[in-house]
Length: 142
Image 1: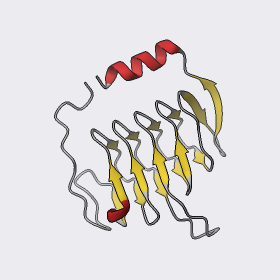
Image 2: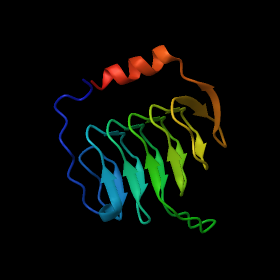
Image 3: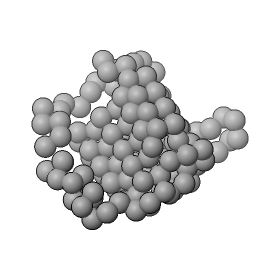
């Protein structure tokens, strides 16, 4: 099982965790079991962020439920066992599907279905994961 000794981190609003990632509006963050968030990542949960179980977020990522540039707002949901590559940005009102892999440096502005590989600026689905790939990902969390 991935992260067998996982313990939920202590999160203080606007202060880095011991793993050096930061949350604003922590009261609107739902953190699933055995999540992994890389150093120097930022989560703005003003309008809700849900990280389901086994979500992995690479370092230097930004998750926004509010965009002050274009006034978009809405919840962000990262479904079970999805993976967000380093330096990616996930914008408001987006859901990333279960087991989905988002490649590094991606700009996620729309929903991504489950069991796919997606990347780019803006993000686009590149391919569907094979049944063997899905089974391997799910085996890692058993």
